[in-house]
Amino acid sequence: MVDSHSTVQHELPGPLEGLRVLEVGDLGEVAGKLLADAGADVIRVEPPGGGRSRHVGPFVNDDPGQPSLLHASRNTSKRAVTLDVTRPGGLEIWRRLVGLVDVVIDATTPAFLDDLGGGWEWAEAEADLESLVWCSISPFGRTGPRRDWAANDLVQLALGGPMMSNGYDDHSLPPIRPDGEHSIAVSNVYAVSGILAALWMRDAGHRGQMVDVSIHESLSATTEGAFPNWEYFGRIVQRQTGRHSSPNPTAPWQYLAADGQHVCLINGGLPRCNSSWVGLLDWMDEHDAAEDLRDPQYQELLFRDPRSNPEGRCHVAETIGAFVQSLPADEVYRRSQNLHFAWGIVRRPEENLDDPHWADWGFFWEGELAGVDEPVRYPGAPYRFTKSPVRLRRRPPLVGEHNHDVYVGELGLTSGELRELLESGVG
Image (cartoon, rainbow, N blue to C red; front, side):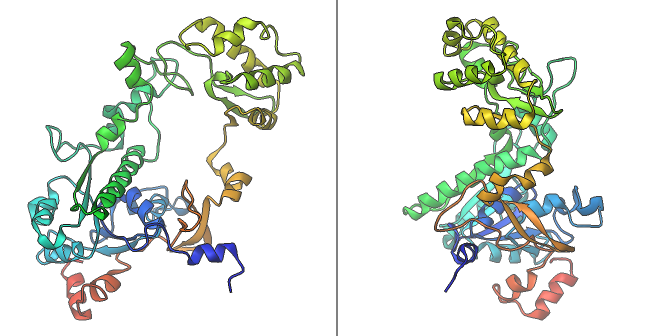
């Protein structure tokens, strides 16, 4: 009998239990992680020596000889094998691996596996693979004039559009980008949605199919207000410091509170419903800070088209901004949240580790990391299932850690054949 909620969660199957996935290339690790944490058996196929993310920082203790935290965060719950499909015998092994799975995440270049005879063109023609879902993740998709263009995260964010909306009020400064290879995270979430849709179609009786994910188009679809402003109004949004880009300048969103911490006021602090507005004015009156905001004209303009009376909206936001600067950040945060405002403290990333809400949610997963003596905490999933938990199923794998399990245990190679595979540089 189990008496621990965590133990019960550990024993329950995940929502994707039974799904088998093969992941190859360097652009699909986030997609593979999302599927693996949800219970899918994801086999990460890397070249001998390991994939790119193993060699990209940050590293444990800032030591390049230690494990990569980037790799660790993207490869939880997976198994890993090594294989060079370009060497003699490598293609045959790859094809046999494909025959084991339901889904292939092909994050190589669009023509790489097809040119070898082991890509979607080959798989689509194989009768035994008619239920296979093949997801290609590439910079510009598998067709079109940019298909073979080279790109990295910086190029993708610039060419896709998001970077133009991010930066500072001072437009003599260049645009900026988020760190952490944002383009991979965005495109991989789209990829998982496409994979699950294709699996749903397959389970409804249709054949497997290709899911063609373009990183460029994923980012172009994630430009928030820039596209609709241009498409519907012919307006170009301008970069602003620490807030949404906008066709016209808006009031600041970040303020230095009385205790030296910054707070962020979404929408410049402007409320989105009458009850919040009244509560905010009452709070400001406690500090004699409401000034003239009880004038009915301000309540009326807040719920009109944002393009109307921008001067009045700025006055409201500036008055609220002056108010929050007189209070400690924690009071601004908690009192505003009680009034249903989306305001918060600007935290250092590490401060989230001790957040009581995240602890109650169980967002961080504790587990092992090879080469590190103490348990480590991994970022978990932003969703929960009551009867099929998403969780850390195994630590990130070492290079080729599961070669024997997969090649001998599942493909049926002998130990001697595996040794030859490794010695020849194929595995």
